[in-house]
Length: 306
Image (cartoon, rainbow, N blue to C red; front, side, top):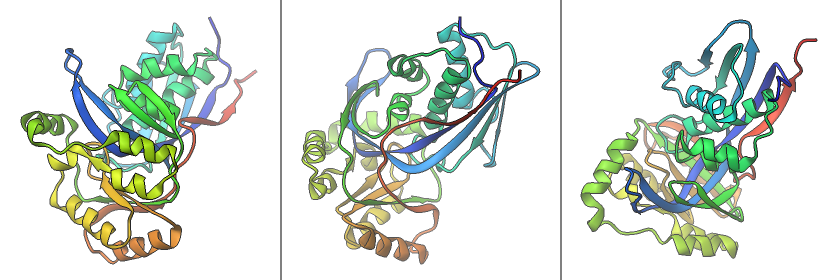
């Protein structure tokens, strides 16, 4: 069994966007099966994991309102790591979360933190678990965790565990989150009631456009089936404004309320950003971002005390 190779590690993990998202069935075990394109962008949570004297898991966060108990996916990831790797938690594990990814946005903030904990503990305890094994552990925590470990751009199928790497799209993204969020379980319940009436995103068109580096094609294929069932009026208004400002495409991401729009260049994106800054709609988050390779990544590690 591996021992402690560091006493403190810092891990950075990017937010996730759904360029397109569809629900294609159920697995018979209560889970919906998904299909769509996922993208990592340069908006990061940073987690520091530290082994200290004592026992148990303690979480603190710079953002008020984030749960600090076992309901936090970071705590669940820590438990899953120790149970799944055979490592023992013989000291207190303190997890500090510096959060920038907005909550209830459909940007995988909680799943990103879980991915960071898995990567951090793998290094902290020197277990040497492979990425596929970490992704297997992550799937038990949440459907977005495997992608948050992988990062980049990928087609995600199944519950989120079947990931096919794709080229990053060209262009610049404006991301805006209106005030308020959505409940994931509620979103799926609404989907189940209306599934037969919904227009389906063209995932194959998205995959083809990404492979061909066709920015206009990526924009045309941006769509989210949940936008039809649980998006508040502010989401539809944002999609409209972004389109009027020259976006190649715009859609809600995940089951949350953030809207991502793809622009061909920074100048076009900046014009949209400046318009939205003029309080066109009340927003909790507004930013200009770019696609990034990679998922949860080690930044630094402090060696154990001699």
